[in-house]
Amino acid sequence: MKDTIWIKKGRFTPLAILLMLALPLTTSVICLCFGRMNVPVGEVLTALRTALTGGSAANVQNYSIVINLRLPRILMAIIVGAGLTCAGNTFQSLFSNPLATPDILGVTSGTCVGAILAIILSCSILETQLIALVFGLASVCFTLKIAGKNDGRSMVYLVLAGTIASSLFNAVGSLLKYTADPQDKLPEITYWLMGSFTSASYQKILIGCPLIIAGIAVIYLLRWRLNILSLSDDEARASGISIKQTRMLFILASTLITASAVSMCGQVGWIGLLIPHCARMLVGSNNRYVVPVSLSLGASFMILIDTLSRTISIIELPLSILTAIIGAPVFISLLNKTRSNLR
Image (tube, rainbow, N blue to C red; front, side, top):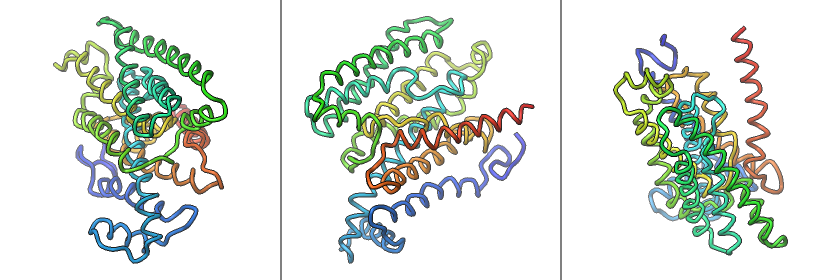
């Protein structure tokens, strides 16, 4: 790969590293200022410094808005955005399919069934998150069981098994929604499924964050192997790595990320599909560079989406609606640009 402003001599340039770190941090500080009540940047920085040092807040109202209300949402947006983008890029590389998404193995459908069941049973927010996470992991186990051990066409069987599992869990979810109380539970279920950071809290982050960070760490440290797995099976075997074990490790890491993210905030579409393509436009298709750039772009994009969801209207808009409204036109423009480059 030839040298660019991003990469020189096979490494990120200092400017690229600075931009990747500064983008989500700057976006977070700016977005902490906006909401139903705007807070000046100086007050935001003062509140953050007070929270870090443990001092007493001069302006209690602004401190409470920034630290107790907006900061948990920003932190969750960073974690979820980076995680779903990382999982999306992993599946696109594993399946050599630019349209692959983090829920390709049925993990999202299983997680949603667990959340719907928890809401019907009137469980607390934390209990809902835990139950949803367990169901998400169970759905992937179910998918792997259906796929069986087929070395020759294992990836094809895996995708087919994921489609079957998604259909089955979607049917179970629809049945649970059909039996839910239409006055009380059904609206809550519907709103949760559309995705929101409304219930974000430090406690919820502590439950879901470790699994997402662990999944991201595995993918980041082994990201160079994604380049090998995108080759044909014969070429990948010639590199000396265990194809089956490596694929399974990436699948499990991505599953942990997706299940944890969905259990915290519901369904959030387009992030895992769109952002990896934007990263490849900047640094090429080498996953050594795509993964770090995707993490930065995904976190920043999710922060912006959450800020728009709580500021663009009197009522808070669900995340999946905004990601679709913004993501679809952007993806269409990317397709048109790619088509024009191929001519």
